[in-house]
Length: 215
Image (tube, rainbow, N blue to C red):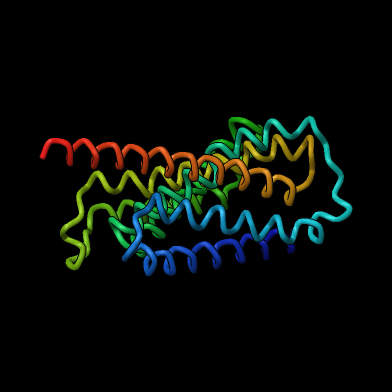
């Protein structure tokens, strides 16, 4: 339990640091291009380190379809939504509304895994929802330009980040290897973001050529 708590805090720290650093890159790169850089970059690093980190990790083929299905949406959609939210709202709003992820995670865990809801978990959810509500009704003065619809970006990101762990746990019950699950997910997400980026660029080039033909 202690190790799990440490991992959870480390994950939160790295996630927060990533949101802040992403703001620097998004000054010159759009969200989709940023996702098409960051997700494959981590995947490549993981593949290089895989002989070391996956040494001795057995392969359970029955769990492969579950992790592949998760990888089609996570972390690809999460990265894209977070980058888009970061660019539209900034890291403070993005990170704060991202705290609603436990609400979706606990709900999914109760529904899918039939886990009990402890009183301290309920209190934590109430605090998270209250904080998010305060953010939505008290717009900072220096962010007066953003639209209300932009709040859907971090909320959708929190939804994805919240429901994926309970679903992933179903796969981990078959194939108890978080490292393999992570690698498979990132490989699938890399394929998704690179494919979408390629399609988008091809569409953009066709529009440019069509526009040039008109003149």
